[in-house]
Length: 250
Image 1 (cartoon, rainbow, N blue to C red):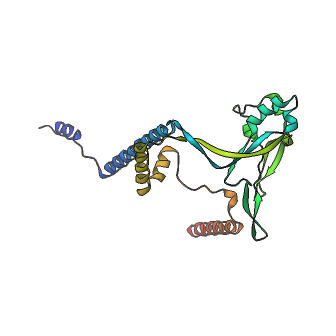
Image 2 (cartoon, rainbow, N blue to C red; image 1 turned 90 degrees about the horizontal axis):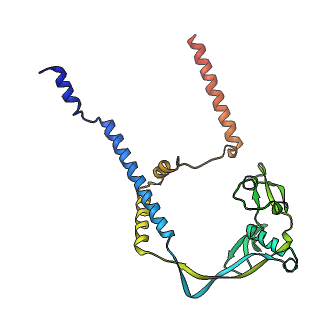
Image 3 (tube, helix red, strand yellow; image 1 turned 90 degrees about the vertical axis):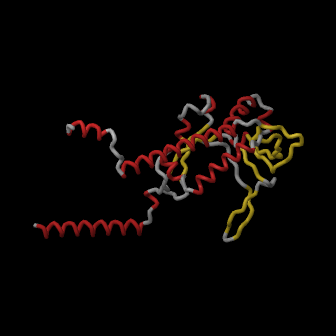
């Protein structure tokens, strides 16, 4: 038998190497994870599409606070303009208590103070974005001001409404009139997938496959000064050691 024919027949029956087997197993495992996450997304979408069921007897669940037109503005000729603007900058808060008080620490003691609420403000990026549905006339009622972060190092600019006194806060009961339909079979499938992912610690790998690396972000400016100095000293020592090694070689 010719050696060339023998080599040709053997090539099509090559066995996979151990490295290739391991790589194919990992690739198949990643594909299974992607299919599982797609299936989970479909289940979540089905749950979101479930209809709302109206309640025969609505019940109260805390209190709701939002802005409404002031009495003098509501009687003025410009009430329609300010009411249309309020629909775009209104904010809503919910609280189990009508007083809307929260605990704050003052001079070592916890005291209850009223939670503050403001009209919506816009960042510079969102102000120039096309999704902000403000007319040119409405934009003239805002001004740009500077905001400092809690650390005092970074400063940003935001747009704020010029006349917040045109509106007042109104507190009213928060009534639940309808609830979301619950599909028991759908909930069991979602719970089964979540338990499987958590039990086998699959979230880091899924995050890397679908959205990028899985790690905790850390800002470079948050490093302490003592750590930065230690890092500089270590770099200097390494540089000196490399220079000494070069001199010894020559």
